[in-house]
Length: 139
Image (cartoon, helix red, strand yellow):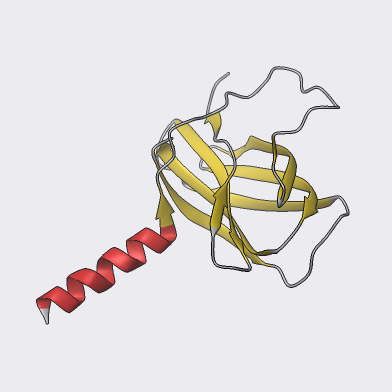
């Protein structure tokens, strides 16, 4: 029974969190022709995090296309190496149109927060964007 519980717990943690090593610091001025991330399945135009209040962060991201993707997850964490899902969108069709998404993370734990998008393909594989570093309360 203890082994089954341990295996179940490990499965839940693995499916909701992810490790990632690379990150991108936010640019002072975004180039209108640049993309945050692009591969054959997903093109992310931008991810922007802004302090919403002293205890929350608003995250906006946009895509130019989504191909063979069944789920988008916005991941968040105190380090770029360990991120957990804070927002999930289930997709049913491909898109070649500009789409925007937005969510608010209430009470992020650290002064520096890292964000990335994990996407699930229709064949069950996962993909990851680069990681965005956001400094809260930086005045």
